[in-house]
Amino acid sequence: MSDFLTLLLRVAGAGLILLAVLHIPIGRHLKWREDAAKMSLLNESIFHVHTFFICVLLVIMGLPCLLEPSVFTETSRAGMWMTWSYSGFWLLRLYCQWFVYKPELWRGKRFETAMHWWFTFVWAGLTTLFAMCGFWQAGWRP
Image (tube, rainbow, N blue to C red; front, top):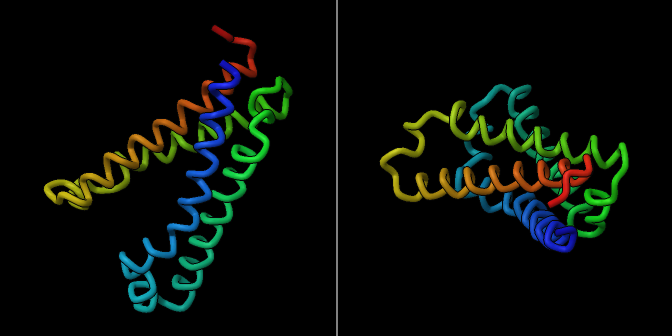
């Protein structure tokens, strides 16, 4: 099971880093620069800084998964905190996918619906993966 978790963690880590990099073409596609230019200078600055830090956070979360997945599987208090914190973070992101984004943004639109469901799958997968690591940290092994 530990080898399987290690593989899943490496895949997740690569995916998180890829998602950070993909913010560049995503931002272009969604015309973030043009929309941000319509905001007050303060809100535009906050938007750009928050977007940058989301990308930094994705890389920070992805690197240990990709390069040192044992930090999630070797039992320690820090590992316990990290696994459950990551799981909670992605659970909150999954909640937002369904209860913060309005259905009008995706329902009835082919590409947007596909993305909505793809990210539902990704956020649920990350939540589950880190919860599995949390249970592993707690000594619950099959």
